[in-house]
Length: 273
Image (cartoon, rainbow, N blue to C red; front, side, top):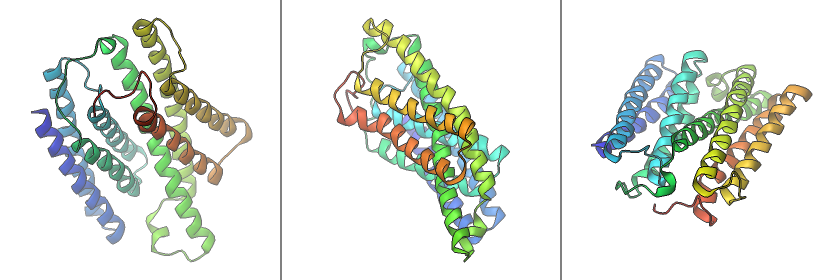
């Protein structure tokens, strides 16, 4: 049953992405409303997929690459729907749903069998760790997208051509504010993810920190975002620099999430794909 809901949500995310892209092209409010509705239905179906998999497995279903990609995509879409309530930046949907869709398509190609839970994952702290870590990553995805849009809009304004693209994008001030808000929400979540992961590690392996590749890159990512937040609050970094750093930070997030797990040997490497 969880696979059925997963496939259905993937279809809705595809249709939602196409609707958001159509809105950018034709600038019809109806298309934007349709896109939000379609993605909301997809998110509901995706929530049922995760819930039914939890019931069928008997544990938090974020233990392999398929489940992790699905959970990350679910978090990204959830953050999009929340951001839409406050900022109503319609173009964000095209970026965020596209990323979520790519993650879902990747997950579709991977084994979906529910396997017995490894002893190390039978921990009270595991659900808290994955929730904070993935929610923080989803918020940083929002900052990444706002940074990309900021650079595109800035280029349009500096070129003084003010083409059709510029009319479809929000102001630089709104994008910079969104970037800052995402940073201030994402950084504490990343911190909580690392702390709960350290506590989990102590229960699982008898030490809080062991410089495993995943732990090392998580710390690198934490320092990177800490520096960004420091520069924002003390030096007053804004605009282009902040947008570029949000993009760099997201690349570090993705390497920590996928690159380390797939390329570097360690305790966090996925045992099956």
